[in-house]
Length: 158
Image (cartoon, rainbow, N blue to C red; front, side, top):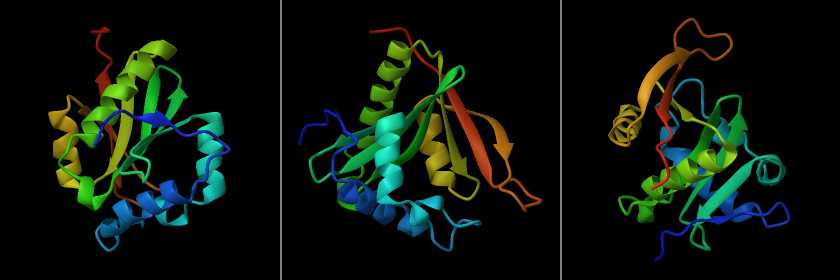
């Protein structure tokens, strides 16, 4: 299978993307508090992200996806998900490489993402891809940090 990402268009059926995200984030249930917003994500929101930001996919099924949203000074990476049967094949790394290219095209010097405090294995994966923790945030109503913010500089074009 090719790891070449393609961009979802707003008119595309959001159901396969929604199913991928829900399945990929399902193992977080009971591990993170508060629960992931992925469970409440709708097809309309996926379409809106494709229209107002970017949704990139690998595989027509799809096997992996990422939401990219420009913000001041950084490209925000959200809903990075890989299907269970497609993990450890380089999909996440391919999507992060794509995010670098998109950030360069948009003139944004940083990539940024968030990961829940409890998901240490994700933290390790992001650190292995060059991200560093730059802060922590709390969901409304929580007295403890619930998410870590990671950033990394966008490298020069190869």
